[in-house]
Length: 203
Ligand code: TYD
Image 1 (cartoon, protein in one colour):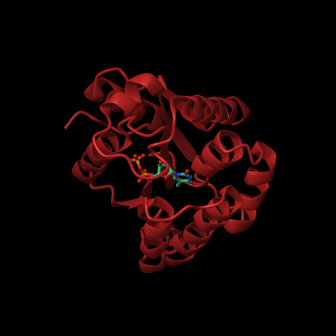
Image 2 (cartoon, rainbow, N blue to C red):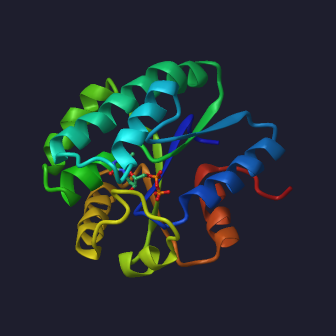
């Protein structure tokens, strides 16, 4: 596998979690040690911050939201991601700092460049090496969702902006991004991801 820290990105309901689970199984079958982490969360502090971010009980200002995402992220990188990567364990991350650039930077309108820079500080320049972007029309992904959290229950217009943010990132970092059509078959997409990552998917 060509990278140690891989992130899955996409708007709410794009199906990241199922693909990550399948990729993790494939890697384990190949005796490639791996660990799934999720953002926001993944540490005790991070799960506390997750509750603040996603509960419908709080109204959160956009900049506060961006900073809370950064705070759970710096903890996750220091406590889990860096130590695991140093041990040779592959990290499969359900979201990453790129979510903040798309959601807070473009979706919320705080600025693509500003939120990129803010996150560069939060992660100490330790960004995922590769990103699988599950691209989908928000109208379709939102209709797939059963229960939406506070951010996931925003309007289609918001998700159209988030999607635009992701596509801009994929364009800027084209060597590190794989864009997948999230409406296509899961196993077919898994195959594409394995080919891209140079992972044997045959057993
Ligand atoms: P997640 O738990 O991945 O939900 P889903 O499975 O629906 O994608 O993410 C929770 C929400 O937080 C989701 O609406 C995306 C949002 N989010 C941001 O707005 N910025 C971020 O930096 C991250 C990591 C998530």
